Length: 171
View (tube, helix red, strand yellow):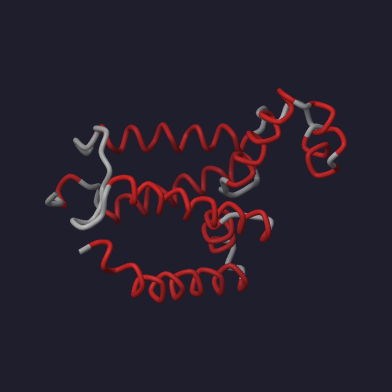
C-alpha cells in the first residue's frame, strides 16, 4: 500500500488543535486530558454488571462508585470525543474505510496481534504508573512538570530504541 501524505492532516494544524482542546479542558473542567481512567471505569461497569458484590469489595473499584455510576465521568465522555474526533479526522481526510495499515511482510493478523499486545502493555503500565501517557505527557507537559518532560523524553528514547527491533515489520 502506498501512503499518500496529502490524505493526512497537517501535523502542525493537528498539534495546534490538540493544544486548543487541552486549553479548553483546563479552562472548562480545571483538569487536563487523559484516557486510562475511562477504560478503568468501563472495566468497573463491566464487572459491576456481572458481579456487583465484587466491585464493592475491591477498594479501588468501590472508590470510583462514590461519585455515582462509573460511566458518568468526564473522562468517559472525553474518550468518546476522541473516537468521534478520529472518525471526523478520517472522514475529512478521505481515509474512512476499514483497513489494517502494515508493512509488506506482515499479515493483518500479526499486525493486529502487535497492536493488541502493545495496547495491553500500555494499559498495564498506565495502571502501575497511576496514569496514562496522554495524561502525563500532554497535561503534565503543559504544566511544565519536570517529571512529565523527563517521562516524554524517555518514551521517545524507548520508542527509538524499540524501533530497531521491529523495523523489519514495516519494510
